[in-house]
Image 1 (cartoon, rainbow, N blue to C red):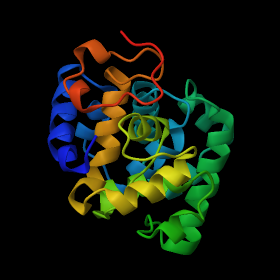
Image 2: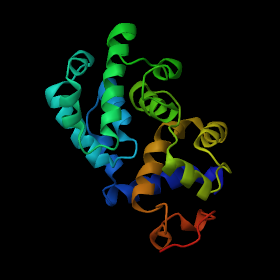
Image 3: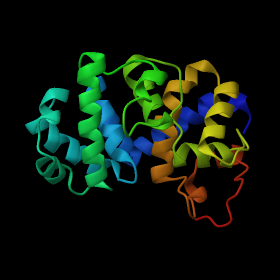
Image 4: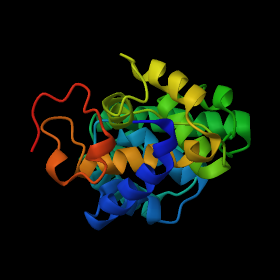
Amino acid sequence: MKLSQLGSALKIMQTEARERNAPVLRVESAKTTPFRALVFVMLSARTKDDTTLRAVERLFAVADTPEKIAGLKTSKLETLLYGVGFYRVKSKNLIKTCNVLIEKFNSRVPDTLEELLTLPGIGRKSANIVLARCFGKHVIGVDTHVHRIANRLGLVKTKKPEQTEQSLMRVVPKQYLRSLNKIFVAYGQTICQPVSPWCSICKIRNHCPRIGVKRSR
C-alpha cells in the first residue's frame, strides 16, 4: 500500500470494524481516565478486550484509585481479576504500580514514556497507548495486530514490534499516529485476522499486497 492511500484506508477499516462490532471499539467508546486506561492496558495482555473490560468494571466498582487498590488484599484483587490472563502476576504488578504512583507521582499517571516505563507491568506498547489516548501524544502502541497488518500492507518490513514502531513513526503522517493502533487492532480482530484473514470481504484488498498471507477466506 502506498502511504498516500493510508488515510482513506484507515477510514474504510474503521467503518468496517465498527459494523462488525470490534471489541476494541466498544472499549474505546467507554469513558475513561488516565488511571483507568493504565489499569486496562496492564490487564489486557493475552486477554480478550471484553474479558478485560469486565474485570476493570468489577475492580473499579470496589476500588477506583491507586490508594484503594493498593489497600486491597492480594487474594481479594485476584478474585476481582479472575478470568484475565496471568491474573495472579498482574494482581501483584498492579499493587506495585499503585504504590509507585502514590509514592512518586502523587497518585497521578505520568505523561511521559520514560516515567510510564518505570511502572511494574508497563511496556512500550502499553505506555504508548496511554500516551496517545489520554494525553494526546502522537505515538503508536504496537501490538501483534499492528505489527502484522503494517507488514501485510507493506508499510514496513520488520520482524519485531519494536522495529515496527520505529519504522511507522518514521513513515506514517503525524495526523494518523494516534488512531492507527485502535483502527489496526479493530480490523485485526474482525477481518485481517492472524490466520486465514477475510480477504474476500476486505474493502481495501485492491491496495493490499497481502505480504505473508498463505491462506485466506
